[in-house]
Image (cartoon, rainbow, N blue to C red; front, side, top):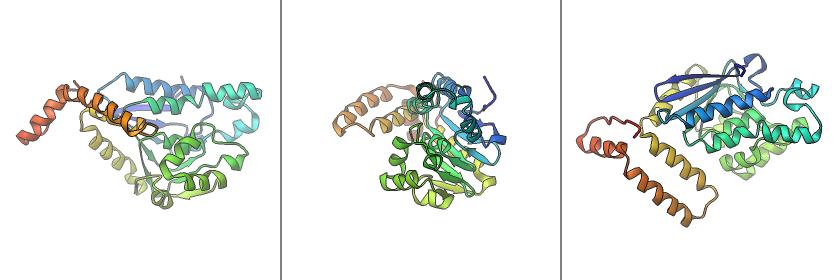
Amino acid sequence: MTDFLLKTRDGPVAVWTLNRPEARNAFSKPEDMFEIEDACEEVRADPSIHVVVITGAGASFCAGGDIKAMQNRTGIFEGSPYRLRNRYRDGIQRIPMALYELETPVIAAVNGHAIGAGLDFACMADIRIASTTAIFAESFVKLGIVPGDGGAWLLPRIVGMPRASHMALTGDALNAQTALDWTLVTQLTAPEDLMTTAMALAHRVASSPGHALRLTKRLLREGQHMRLGPLLELSAAYQALAHHTNDHAEAVNAMIEKRPPNYTDS
């Protein structure tokens, strides 16, 4: 493993920091992808983690692919077209699959540039908040390539097809205010307040029972491609499970007794 992903913990909130600030936190090595995938598996296996917050070290969130590695055809950009196709499938494309299947809510705290694969990485989160200095770009066409890591699927579901088309076909950058106006992010903060705001939001989310958060996220995910009838069936099944948890009983009792709940993730 490398030290690309720093992981810390604040109670029920896990914090992941992309930690290659000298390269604007760009993806450059296969190990980068595996670290994120492994981190998702660690969270999946730990029900005491209710929320994940992702941010970047330094002035950037994530600059996407390493341009110098592209130029030199090294690292994740090395090899023949056949090998490169498999590098995408077995490398960076494992990240959207891992994050999409992760039932724990994910918040992206976008502290600076979120460019190309970096923007798509932010789009893999459930909630995005940003610093007023953040910059966003679906910039693949400016390098003569295409969104290779799920952006063509993720971005239209967040901002709508017309705006996603505008971003992907021009490659133009958006400032933070436009990102807010286009619903790419839900909140802007001063740069120095970003992590405080993100952690406050994370703890607000994490204050609910973990099982309810995970099942709700799964329903939201499945609802993107299911008809109403099957989704209602899945909702009924999940609701039946939720009704028989200790934390549901504790939530009801605490509300009736007008006291703070004490959840046990059971």
